[in-house]
Length: 289
Image 1 (tube, rainbow, N blue to C red):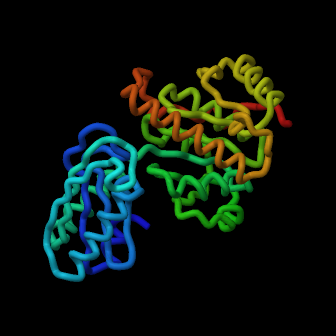
Image 2 (cartoon, rainbow, N blue to C red):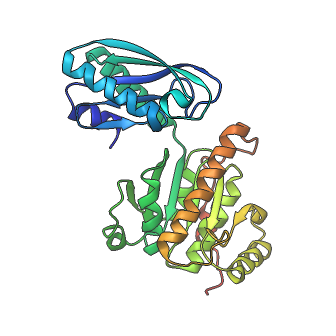
């Protein structure tokens, strides 16, 4: 549930925020959580700290208290071992507070990185199921409407007429997961994503053999793709488990690590690619199988 939906569902809410943080803490200053009488949204780090903050927030709701502040040591006094100290601010939300929270939530959602999942098969749907819980704007795309109809994740669903064009329209620093039902289409989409030069992650489902075929495709067709930046197989890691849910968990970890690393490094310097011509990619002949 989004913050906007949470606030709309509850008339009385207390905003709980970490103010000053000294030493080690489970979350950074500015982290916020929203507490209703029987529900909550977000987390300030869990543990005894969060338990005490939730209890105080609900006490405020019951007694009509508008604001409070807690100064808590994160040590044995409260059953935690972080060793730091945090100041927690609690405030019952009025109409203006709700409007401001709505605006912050919308801004955060708009700024979230895009993750485009090409292919709504077993693996694609499993990845979408996990990505719906990540701080990203996930899109599940397929050329087959009936396969999208089988997906249940709360992410954007898009029937893709020309997948390479969807690659071109994605924002800078997007992540691309390629797992379609067609190896030829896989190659076209992965090639277009790599040719952008600004993707945080490009992953292609398959094997080492498929990776070798893709490398040969790039060489033979002289595309602008930097195949060294391709992750293939995706979700390999230390696990050899090929069940869709396990692959999805590993892929989600790969993508979130790549997005976090890219965000920490700052914007890339490659040439922007909005408006790139994908018509050539759309008509290339690629190896089948």
